[in-house]
Image 1 (spheres, helix red, strand yellow):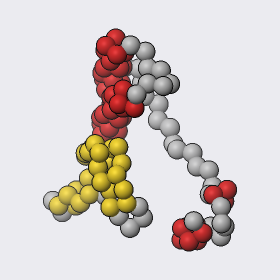
Image 2 (cartoon, rainbow, N blue to C red):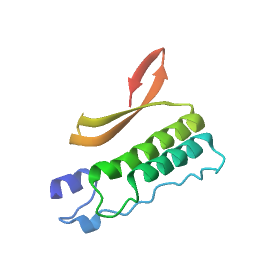
Image 3 (cartoon, helix red, strand yellow):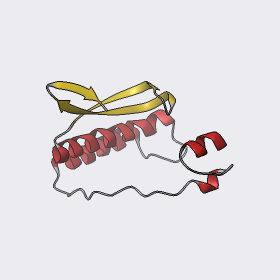
Length: 118
């Protein structure tokens, strides 16, 4: 752990030195078409599956997460005009981390007619 913390400029042996962070928020309007679609999809799932409880199966919880992720991508795509792709059960390999994730989202930047994944 100490080596990883030093790599990011934190001289410590414990996680208490990792600073807290806050993500920027974005207010979604009630009349946003993607938000309305997401809410309709969640209501249909609630009607089909019943209530989502704390001890619900992970696969059931993922059903709702997928609806939210797709809607968030569409809202951000409209707002930023950037292209995204989402891959479920993706193996991530990189300099900073490696492993399987539930969902990987890539942002594509166009540069000289060549798409480079960030």
